[in-house]
Length: 233
Image (cartoon, rainbow, N blue to C red; front, side):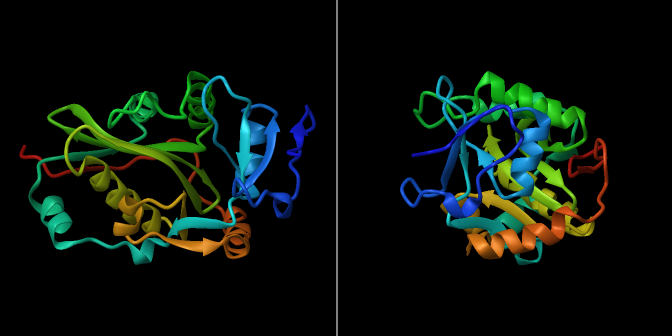
């Protein structure tokens, strides 16, 4: 039986997460900033479809990227050097979220409903959620968003409207976070796309131990300022 959260700001121990489906911990509650921050600080994240109750997860294995392990293939390195693009941070957060929520590859949609968009935009306004954006000739063509607590970054979703646009944002995000002292990026679930960039699975206990160290460290607050241009003047 999955516990149902009430108004109390608390989560069950992650050790109580189900084996099947892997990591399901609780249902209900809300998407207030205080509850989201508490969840992320304990290695718990919301994931549910619009119209369903809010579901909270802490899987037995976590897909993570240690920024120092970022893998850049020859073809991606060539794109980084030669492709015309601009990277911006925190200039179009809501637009990035809406793009991540749009249907893709014949699917009817994603798990990012209007309530989720509003909740993370609230975190963004508080300086706790950030977007890394790929632009071409002034048009948003790809990007990703996530949550930052201390020196821990939790990647949530990414999108591409042109080839490699999300990878460009991901590479610049990883490099920027490493330069700012962030030591781990939570990617949540395995995908071949993330694995190709150097992300790997680690057990929950290892993830939580590293998380505990990182969320307590001081880090840049508020909106982040970062721009890189590979476009001709």
